[in-house]
Length: 148
Picture 1 (tube, rainbow, N blue to C red):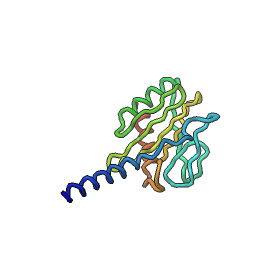
Picture 2: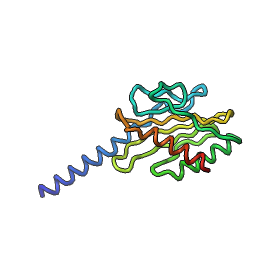
Picture 3: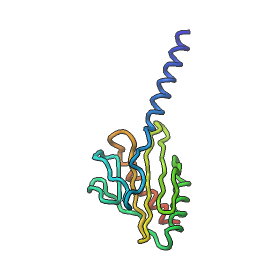
Picture 4: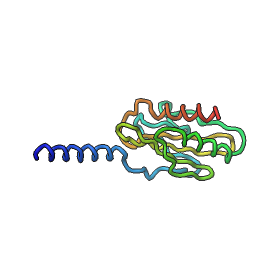
């Protein structure tokens, strides 16, 4: 009986820990005056708009219409493991990426311009370091986007 209780307690603690890794969706998400939110001071974020050298990443580039580019971007995101599209508007896309093991959630945003650019921001919800995961993810999106 004692071991069954310990097992339930362990599983409840583990579930609490894993769900806690998701964090809450930041209120700063979205485009404000044509810009994505700046990165925090922690190294677990990249952004193509006004970011410091440590956080900067190049925007995606496209030719054609923003509508076609958005559809191509959505196809790329739908094919990526752990991605869930939260918001899909004509000039803005927000996706959540959940890691397989610990269920950490990162928010990835895309802001399409008429000038052939898709500004990007990818940030972890919790923690300090992401071991370069957000930068690698955006580069994977870039590669898949350019290949389509």
